[in-house]
Image (cartoon, rainbow, N blue to C red):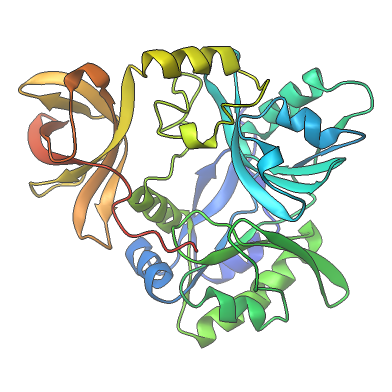
Length: 365
């Protein structure tokens, strides 16, 4: 029998707003409300609010918890301090990516992790297996919601609730909101200035409604995961299962910047160090359509009639108003910015130019 889809803490609000739903990592989540393009444009021009409570949450606690996490995950926690967050990855011994996630450095004995929904159990299992005596790994998937407020007017929306906003990118603060508390993070997945809030699960609907009221006051929109995907694709941000996977390494996905190469240890270090020395056999590039058409994932990319790679994600860019894609292209193909390739779209050869992501300007800071 098929397992029933999990429900987030804000499902009632989405139903009231007329959302369309789809499955994401075992959860029933809103795809769109007014339409993906309108929601996408609201984030780029004013502000959008997303429910992403399906994302995982886990805590690693105990004496030396931060040192343990740092010896397993790719990025270097020693680069940041308590009150900061860091993009990082959990790899296999052979350099594949179990998941990419955000690590919140609470203190030397407490690290809070936000992995992808579908990979939370795998992340928790690996860390639990590797944890020494005294270190506890706890799956807190349904203890907290996650609400993203993204866009040029996100600061005034969050500040209207009396929550802290004056923090640098990738920092966070724990704040009181009425009788409860919420973690406010200067993070996001859209390329815009924004925040991600982690309220307690049972408080999520109440704070979502309050934020949505402020979003509407400034002309923003509630946004679904359809817009979240078009926004992140424009930024060239990887999505696990597309640009990162057990078969796609951080180096191939241009995520080597999130690897602490000088660290003495992290899972997959030997394999990734060897790959770095030899050079990855394929690299993630952007493709911008030169012909009319929409690019999708899983399409063959050709140069001079010969296959040189495959698209991993694709969409029509509402901002650029052109078809765009991310693609893993063979290193031996010798492509560079401006190289013209063809994408096989159901038997039709669609011309595209190779570009280096992102497709739009980054405004996170």
